[in-house]
Image (tube, rainbow, N blue to C red):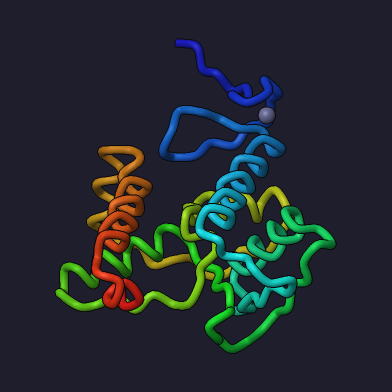
Length: 183
Ligand SMILES: [Zn+2]
């Protein structure tokens, strides 16, 4: 059996593995992959509209990755203001695992999920954030408490987490306007 350890993006060696696909990425292609996904989310969902970006500094790995990505994406065009308290304008660093866990648990308990202001990295898996930190030598710190049900399904069917995230997005989009804020 031949094991391919070259990057699927550029063919270089020294590769990073992600659990949801057989593809491997070198450091450069991996960082590019994450940045591209975040850039797309910020653009499509119009998350950045002002010159100053208020970013919640909760001293998490998500904050450190978000800050780095925002700097890469906007350079000197935007100012990043680190804040400790949430306002309507604050961008909250999170990860996809946390978001789907909170939403699934709310649905299972028949409760409304109160989504925090605007989120960044809600389409990036925690494992990708950890790999990002390792490559960029950022502190990792606390890890997410996972949902067993989601983890078990993901193990059997790779890509479940992304699919769940998309489904919750669709559900929210199709709710009457007045309920959208509370999901
Ligand atoms: Zn590569």
